[in-house]
Each structure stands twice: as structure tokens, then as C-alpha cells.
Length: 395
Ligand code: PLP
Image 1 (cartoon, rainbow, N blue to C red):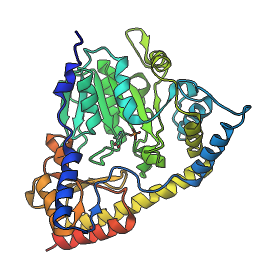
Image 2: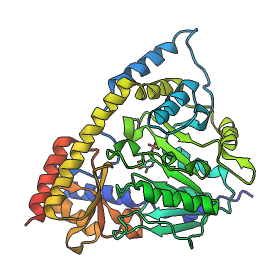
Image 3: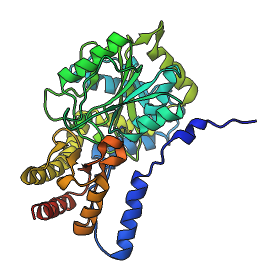
Image 4: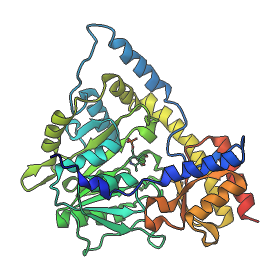
């Protein structure tokens, strides 16, 4: 008899976006035709840049010509893209080789798949509030989860504690949902903790391109010692608008090994077994992101989201409302005013000013009392939403 993976029964309902959709639908049924200002959106709103579009078109044309046609691609990624990613790291002073870069179809896939490298008995430490995939992927894999609460007191950036018992640690910086970014010294403490314990850090750098302060680390490999304790998972989704196009990359250092086994070799074996690579066309589009032209163009798009962030930050600064994020991240994480609960604040904004955000409680219990605003929306909508928030909360 087939025994299902009973871990699925342990998953909590992912009710956050469902509940938001239900509440929004109910509101629109009561107030037909009302325009809503959607500040909860986690998807990008700007199109791919022209350098990427041109590369995609050229790659499609290649597929029409016998001499330039590509069938299966190498499972770990096309050499041209692995090299482009590696030299992008090197241009920022981070020594990464093409063999350490694995091309993926996005960070979400990798955040769960990467767990294949570790024995089932290895528990996963997750700093909460957290991007829900860390918890869910670990639950499906039947792993013990060690939640580490992040709080306003530690700026949503907790430090390691020698009593913490876990073998794997998910770190996300800039963070979704809090927008908090680990400064170099704090990240160093986690790297030292992991090296001391023999733990492995799974570093989610999906939002690294939003860091504007020079002294903040955009890669964990900027920290001395990280190559013996970390894997970095990255994505072009938010960096370059690839949410629908799908492309990411994972860096596994050659030096990273435990128990005499090298994780880079193991991942090569894993990929050659479990994937047949990412499409040639998409990888060509991805390579264009790392050209000089591509970098300039994606920066223009990021600047639009950053202006949205500034508009929102300005409103919360004027209101004296505490928040993290915004400056170096595409999310703002605010304390709900007047000690409102996060769903209560959601209802209040929807009813009074037709603004939709994301209740912090949906990212874990310690998100209660907080609220996430995204900066990926339309600039005019963001300005209007900020002005409505200012009017409402300064009353
Ligand atoms: N990691 C974080 C923190 C995210 O917020 C997201 C998407 O929102 C992802 C990973 C997933 O990225 P991708 O689109 O590459 O799967």
C-alpha cells in the first residue's frame, strides 16, 4: 500500500493571500467599481529591460537555425551564464568561480530542493517572521524546525546564541517581509557561529540588488569564513523583473564540505539527476542582465521601486511610525499604529482609504502587530496611497 508523505498534513494552511483575496472580494462586492491601491503586491510591475528583450529575441531566432539551434542545456547551467554570474561577483570583489555557480529556474525551487544535500536528521533554524517557503519546504522534508523570533528590539535581526541547536540556518537579507538588512558585523557573528558548530547557512539573497548603502553586504561571501559554511541562493525575479520569465542562481563554494563530502560535487550529481537544465532562450536573456547595458537598465527599474519606497518612508517618518526596510529593500515593515492588530489594521486601511497591504501575522506569530508595504506597485498609486495614509493617520 502506498504511504503518502504525511508531512503534508503538518503544513499550516497558507491562508494569508487567500484571506486577503477574500476580504478584498467582499469589499468590492459591497462597493462595486471602487479603485483599490494595492500595496501588498510581491510581484514586479515593470517590464523586462530592452537588453534582455533583445537577447531573448535573438535566442529565439537561434532556435530556428540548424547551426545555432540548442537542445538540452548543461544541467548546472550554460557556461556563458555561469561565467557571467561569477564575473559579476568578482566585479564586486567577491571571489566566485563559474564552477561554483549553478543556474536555476528561480530561488523558490532551490530553497526547497537544496535540502536534498542534508541528512533528514538535520534541523532547520528559521528566523521569524519569515518568507513562508523556508518553513513549508522544511516541513515537507520532515525536518525539525527551530524558530528564532526576530523582534523590534533587535531591529528584526537577531544575533546567534550558543544555545541554539540546529544544523541548517535560513538567513534572508534584505529580508522579506521585514526589509531588514544584516550589517557586516552581525552577519560575521552568524558565519562564526556556523563554522564553530559545523552548521550550514542557506543565504537567500533574492533582494541583494536593492541594497544601496555601500557598507552593507550584498553577498554572504563578502564575509570572511563564509565559504566554509554557506550556500547563497539568488534570483533575477526582483533584480531584473524575471518573476514570470524564471531564472536564478545558487553559489556553492568548492571549500564547503562536511563529513568528507563536498556539497558542490553533490549538487552537480543532484542536478544531473533531477533536472535537464534551464532553457537556452531564458539563459540568454539572463546573461544580458550582466552586461553593462543590462546593469544600467535594471538599475533604472530598481530606481522606480526605490522612489516608491522613499514616498512611503517619507509618509511614515512624518507620522512618527516605526518601521524597518525601504532604504535597502523593496519592503517596509511598520508597527501598526495605536496598537492595532495586523488584520485589524488591514481592515482599517481597506475600509477607510482603500489601501491594501499585507498583515505581518501572516509571516509568523511574531509578525503580529506589524504590517508590510511593498514598493513594487505603480508609482502614481503609491503616491496616492501614501497621501491617503498620511491624511488618515494624522487625524
Ligand atoms: N526568496 C524570497 C525572500 C522571496 O521573497 C522570493 C519571492 O518573493 C523568493 C525567494 C522567490 O524568488 P523566485 O521568484 O526566484 O522563485
